[in-house]
Image (cartoon, rainbow, N blue to C red; front, side):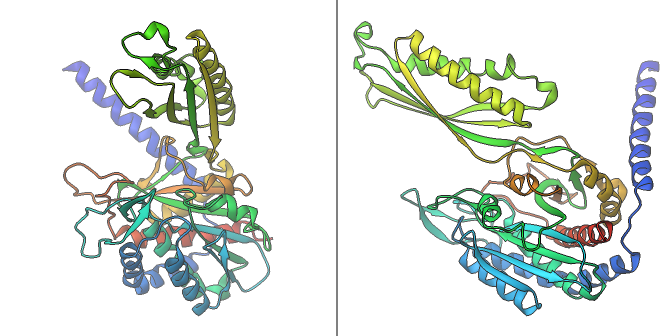
Length: 445
């Protein structure tokens, strides 16, 4: 009993220390934006909340795959024009960029939302569920906003509405980036953030800072953040293993590529467990596909492996690439086979600017309450917001969208049953609006 009491004592004191530390950080880094403007934001959100929810439902009901967001982009562009923004369309094919100029020349803050959906048939049972279908990879599939981009887009439209009403009080400009194809290039040679950066979205004018968010199955009302890496880099790989086929009853007359593949699948895990310094950042290497052969008594000439690499820093990323090439080549040769490895470098690690995050924490605390701002562990999923962060100081955060009274398993993003608590939408609008205003005054020259 004594030991139990002692453990409870230590647990309570540990959590009190954490809370005190958070409160101290917030106190030492007080907001710089006038409280009057934050009050105006709250009033306007109350006025427009239901309209933003209706935008979300409309976008959810009419999802579009990557590089095909024509309807969504049209809705966004028309809305920004009505608000008096300077609007660019067809950026990175279907992207929209709107510029809101404030009362004076000053800093520029960028805000980003992604617009694309996924090839998934929806099973939420919502009254506004998607019934859209399309042909993808030669198959008829459903289309669904299973990653919350409908919430991202509608929320940023709401931020545009709120800040447009306050433009005479803004000491600078806000650039709104509505991005296509975050989920990847579908029938297009490039995609999303990378293409938008290549086409000059961070120029004329260049932002001093950029903010983005992603819905996440945290409790509604909470915001998750990280002071460094928050999401991983992602690279896809393909290994073709070439042997010499023949009759399965006489394997000694062949060079069987299947045991080569089996050895590789098991052995490449040592690239993580014995080659990477995991205390400096997590890393994952997974094989997601294995194909080869078409009959039980035929040894095939060739087998193919498909997989993904996820890391939290470039040193580890480069090391794994180098070791994977060596391992696959030498393993194949040891069996008398050969291999060809192709690595497709996709998104870099999403790394938040530590100083900016520290300065923004007080205003996020104002938005959701200090106790609801949670430092989260870096995730192994990826996001192409990293391309913006490679160019401009920024912050990417997680928006909680799971009701506190939710019962049963929580459907993850990319699930046919994924849904969000719509009360989180006003929190998204408020937090992004607060961040934009705070940053404008912070960077004010």
